[in-house]
Image: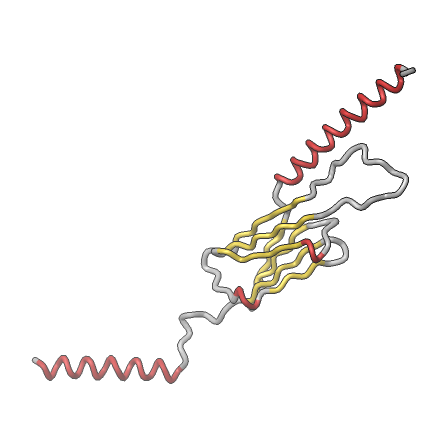
Length: 154
């Protein structure tokens, strides 16, 4: 025999589950919040990624942008049933470096702290306008020789 309370309870469970899944999807679509910091020798992008394990994080650097994807899993709790699955499982974020940033992407590293903060450090590359003195002198000498040969051709 089914009681009215049983029917109401299953309806409440169904509503909670749907609302929870909706909240979860919204969280998955919302980009991870981040801070962008700069020092003399590097950029540091700090993402909030609570509940993520280091093995579940992917970090890429593409066209001046740090891209992060993190998959997290719900732990099984014996004796409990999920009634409101409100946490997103697939999280992502993007952070653009300044347009004039010159970085060494191969030297970048990422660290996930115990409190769920993902820190991506990207070292700055040597400035491409810096030319070693020996090359600069050679370049000037080459220009002078070129100018002198132009004058002798006249």
